Image (cartoon, rainbow, N blue to C red; front, side):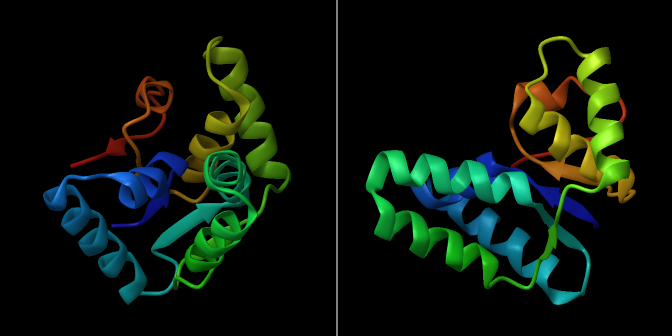
Length: 134
């Protein structure tokens, strides 16, 4: 499975009290880390994760959590021209789609990923890509 990981995946795996969910998240990460280029993290996810953690827990926790994501054997995907154009098309097609979610979905589309790992309703509405959650 080639997958793009959404911010909500990381937030939920960090903050969930559900042990079954945490186990599923760990197995998902382990499976994506086993082979190069199967798991991708758009750079906008790092922005969102850092911002949320900074607001909720402060700079030290934000840096620790972002660094733990960056240490995973996942491919960090920067916003390039093809992803930017695909995200713009998605924003025009889906009026309520936030820009960050458009970039995440566009990353999945442009990399021919099997899915976006998320429970985000904004991304779930996009017909051009699939989502996966527990």
